Structures are given as structure tokens and as C-alpha cells.
Length: 231
Image (tube, rainbow, N blue to C red; front, side, top):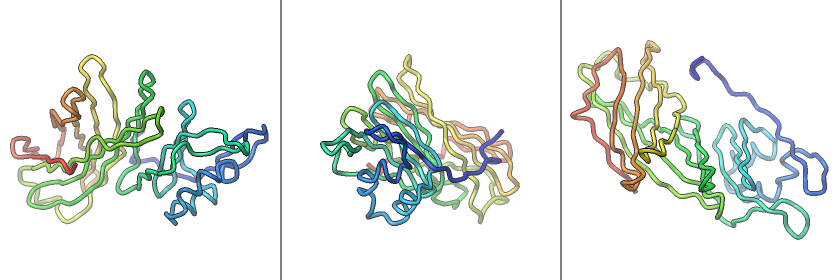
């Protein structure tokens, strides 16, 4: 089933605290959540335990709400409670899509990506691609790719003046070629399917090395399409 047909619902996250008792995450992780109190929408989700997705990587956690997500490296403090390994936070606000992530277990790093729709104009679809890296060793998140991509099409008049549906991207890694692939589906006003594929070279400092796509309802003009970095 396509993600286009799926929906999100809230779930409550419950964890066993260092004392061995099971509590809701807004109590067990209260010290960590406090870091995000300056982001009212997110903090409200957290204290109400309105969680849409979570994961665990060794001593690191991933938590997502309707407003965005974050990764945190945690440890047990002197008061026998869960604490954040770092003082700073890195909140990934949701714009157009959720993130998708891939865990590099060998290097203990999580790579995650999302797509932000920017505009449709001048026969082009413009979007922002983000690729970030969370280091499970240091607890620090770094931006690897922040690239504006402008895809041009031939005779696209029939689909202007609307915001296309862009589904959550999928990220994978080929260790043989040291390339990441990020692909995503977008749909026309009539819900027609299209697939865009982006190849990113780790050897070339996370440079986009290839853009391709399958767009049955339009002709993709790869030659005139362009991209540029915001980093």
C-alpha cells in the first residue's frame, strides 16, 4: 500500500525507568523533554505523550510527534534518572514530509532525510532536500545536504497552481559504491503517480551525482533541471 493511503494516529510511549518501574515517557524522559520547552508546539505534544513514532539505537532514542522529531543520546544521572548527553538540542521541524532514516550500525550513525516543497513555477517543481547525520557516539546532529532542486518539465500547464502531494522519502545506502539513494513519490492534481530518485556520493562530500525520475503524466527535462547547495 502507498503511504498516500496511510494516516497517523497518536500513541502513548511508556518506558521502564532506571528504578525498574514502568511510567509514561513524559515522566520517564521529563528531564530530556525540558530541553524542548522553548518549542511550544513540540513541548505540548511531549508532555501530553502524543507520540507518533519512536525508535532506540543503543543508548540513543528517536521520538517523533506531528510537529517534528529529534534524536537524543541519554545516560543515567546521579539522581538515577534519564538525562541528555548534550546540552544543545537539534529539533527537526516537519515541513512537508516526515523523515526517513537509515542506521549505520558499524559507525553508530543515523542518517535521516526529508523533503520540503517550495514552489511550482516557470515549468518547474522546486523542493528542498535535507540529509542529516546523528552521531550516536557524540549525540550531535550535523547537516550533510541542504540542496534546492528544481526539476523542469515540458508542457506542464495542466498542473500549475496547486501544491503536489509529496510522500515521505526513502533512504538507502550502497556500501559497494558509497552512494546514498533518496527517492520519493509525488502526485499530480489528479493523484497521478510520479517517482523522483536522487543519488548522493559519500566519496564526493555528499554531492548529488545523479537525478532521475519516472513521471508518466509529464516529460521530465533533466538537461535543464538544476540544483544548488544552501550550505
